[in-house]
Length: 340
Image (tube, rainbow, N blue to C red; front, side, top):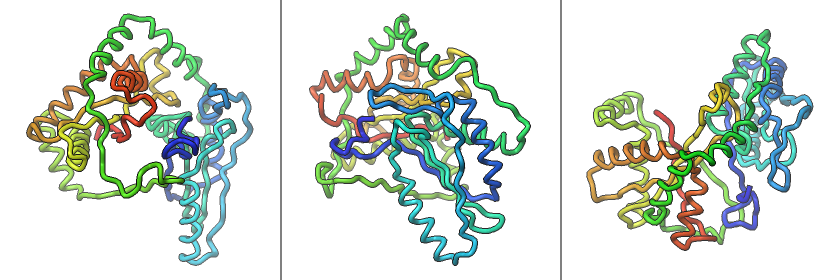
């Protein structure tokens, strides 16, 4: 919420997921499937009021996937229109108090080809929830006879259960665990910059992609497997070491995204909502050999995950307070952890 304010350093943006996919979609059929999923999942009908409270709309109305016909245009004209659409929708900031906090737009490129643009405000759903949404929409798309019903245990019930959990001894143990570490974190990487954040009026983010062959990746995964840690941990450690090297630091702290779903109810596994939390993790840049540091990181991740009842935002606040960093940016480099 705070990051949406243009008055904040590097602000004026939101946490936003954007996808493009091409297929021979039947858009009216896809629209019907999507609306069934919206009806069955309260957080897809959620808005965030100006006071910060969430509200679930009982009947927000029918969501129509708009379809634009580009079949009569040349390839160059199609690419120009699609490029402008990508520029607009990939950085869209939704009005958080208005439904919907997601968007779908279809461009028909040929009789049997549609480019679908999809954007989601992550105020209402996390990365795993996006997968659940897509899976459910396509399941109903394939079989329109499936009937979905809303679970009796909702995301609101989940949040209330989390609040109740804070009264438990497990929460106190987790709180003590993180508070003991609060003074030990090294801090964010300090990279050389062409411009300072204060000089950037409107930040624009670009994805940088490097691909390796399937053969090389499989060979690397086999080598990683022999060292008893995950491919995700290996990439995270490399990422941290590169940031440490360019920061001229021995150790840096990463902000690692984790998706914490406490099993209060069987419905939680397939629930759509924002279960995102963060984990602070130090990466040693040079004092130990790479494979050994990967194993150290894997062990620390396992230990940290056993104490996630005390959420990451509270940890960052505690660290900022103890290290006199209140009001400043403490951890700015994030690693999204997936099992690869």
